Image (cartoon, rainbow, N blue to C red; front, side, top):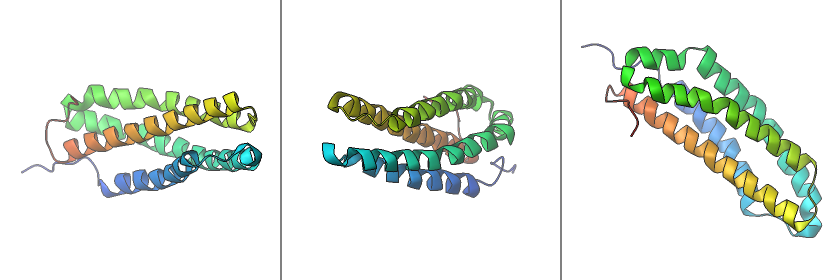
Length: 152
């Protein structure tokens, strides 16, 4: 019987888990925003965490794209081709949104409306990044298990 995977899955899932841990620290901050008096140091900490996360995410996306992961998935499971292309297309958008968030947080929105807008932007990005990873993991499991990799 032919092997059902394109490359060892464990490193991919481990890397996703490592990125998720950093993202969860950011998410924890967003779940406990400070009162107005504590916003400036909190925003600095948020910027630091986002800046720590960005190069890791950049490297992860580059490794997936330049390392040929999605090409291998497409070759192994043609039903996954469209999903793989969608993941690749999401990468620059996600990086751009992260850069925008870092810029917004670095401006240190002290007024309540600006701060609430920043929180909403950050929470939405965290949710989108988590969804991207979950869907990508689902695709990898489907391909590695040899099932129908087309996403519903």
